[in-house]
Length: 451
Image 1 (cartoon, rainbow, N blue to C red):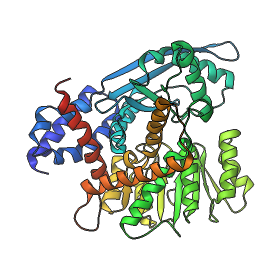
Image 2: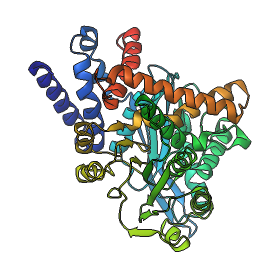
Image 3: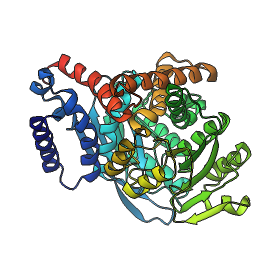
């Protein structure tokens, strides 16, 4: 990168910091994308003159609102809700809702910014958005969750719709929450319309949606290996998380002949040297999706398993790592452990689970490293396909959606290679994903003029 461009990049980032004080997650996401984009647009005057990157890094709007609800003991509780509508240049805003005590405006702005590029990579007409609340559904009764969701939707409904903004689930927002949210939306607007995705199949949901993010991440890994004339068969993987993404990633990795050695939750991690096979995964699905139990119970059930109270799996020797829990779970030291222990591929099932310093370690080591905006795009892709099914009043079968998901992840891989191949034996998937995602949105913004 030329010196002048280096100055421009730093001037740009100083502006982002000044306009978003204290929003470290958002600043991190913008920096990660922008350092690649500045090199790409060096000789492209039209993007500079139209201030495209500056406009992308400023959300169209950030909606913040109070959510009041009553708990089972008749105490009045107050939470804060948000919807960040980042960019709708190529389609209606699309992105999940996250209910977690750690949700802040900064977290949702970073997620909405990332979502803009992720949705662009899918090739579907979807813009980028994200929302949620600092509400913790863990330990709450179904009635409490219902009352919170209904109160949340009573404000949110006026900002969403099938042609405007289509939320989905995310951390803390599963089938139960989606049902309550959609029920309240339908009640208020007096219309049945595809304003939310991730719905149960009984009321307009799509087959393959629960599996899509985890399966898609593994399919992306398959394409990375195939690009090097290799495959997953016989490989080992360490996976973090034990929610929808992690368990389905583990399921597909195992189906394709690999062995999964670890999973985790917010309390700790398990290490099963024998591998977490299909029978164990079925037990885990019942534990997590039906009983809402903790991962420590796995070690009590299956002998030979080590439970790491408060620990992580990143020092376990393996061929692949799939971080599927939350943002910034892998820092510089964890990244070094992965490299030192022989990991050759890191595929992000979560959104921005690696810090900027960790990403630099992966890139310097020339690992096969796939950022979340590319690798975990399968979830939003099938959500987009759910929107199509709702509009047509049809329901596609598992085989059709599986084929579409497989083809879509292969297409995203091809785009990343197009812009990330160094001309030798290395593909910089971060660079490839950033540029490919940027170009489509940027060209649409140019076509619209200054709006």
